[in-house]
Image 1 (cartoon, rainbow, N blue to C red):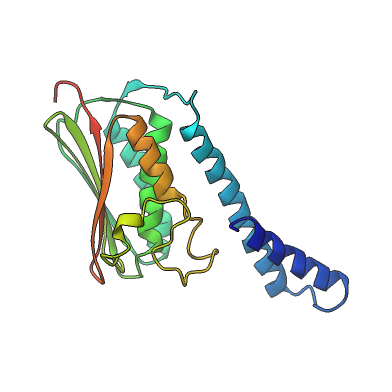
Image 2: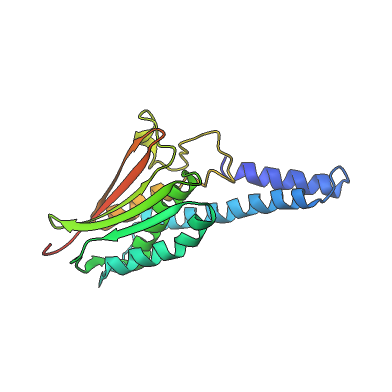
Length: 214
């Protein structure tokens, strides 16, 4: 269904243009382009998800500065948030030790959580990222002041292809795999991910990673 619908849309537009039923206007081309971008994101996410579920999936574990991983993700993300009128803050506890992790995979987790926060936060809102350590765990929180998630759907947000707001289009609502991928990658590190949320106040996504001697 997730593949069939955008492909059918693209085919319909192209055939209508070919048959002279629709003018190849800038709006039409933009609609087709958005559908193609959606498909590209979907294919990439499906590829990553299949990798995490494969029996031979392996992490490239190294002692890495979690501080550095988070900062780079936030720095890359900030211009888009600023363009949307959303403030971004970062707070990292002093003394955060190196963590044994796969740098690329944990960066993907942070990116997915930031992307989710951006999608559900309106202009004038805030997104804050906080990292701390304690009880042999490194804890990273991504908090937004967005629309929030209702209690009845909260248990399902990490399920594949699940959208908090079913009315969102595939262009604006995302592919529906980002949080699933984040969960898979965190669990592959021996960690855990969770969410708390209040409607019209915002959401807090938290993931924890084991830390030796912390």
